[in-house]
Image (cartoon, rainbow, N blue to C red; front, side, top):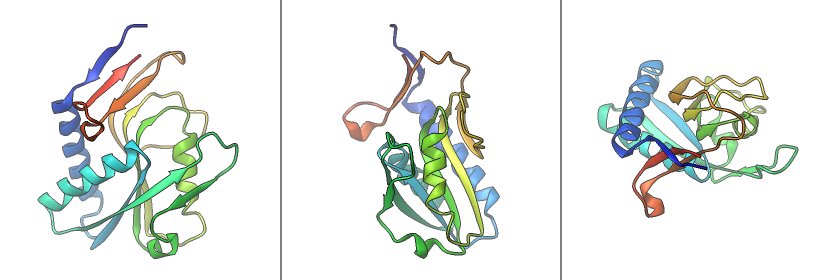
Length: 167
């Protein structure tokens, strides 16, 4: 199957910049937000969003790393910071690609037992193949694809230039 580049390095950075401004607009009255990045690429994306948000504002941004067992049929996950430290704060769950929605739902599930100010979601690519009733608040690009196609996001700290591919 042919590999088609749908986003290059410059376009990915433009998407990150735009999403950062949207997050800032949505949280203009907040002192602090938590970007909860789903490992591996969601966490890398969260780190990049943090840099941009801190560059354009005085908003305090913390990054929480979410590790999920994506193959499990039930929620199995852990965070690098205790979830109760997110109580009464704005939490933004970040992932690279939204396909069925299972990973994003599991990521959100980690915060169900604590009170929060609000919870939002960010994805770089939304494939619109949701099997779960999940809503994305901030999206880099939405694609209409067939279910046999796959979207791969590569970020430069994996040793290659940033890109998103349809395969």
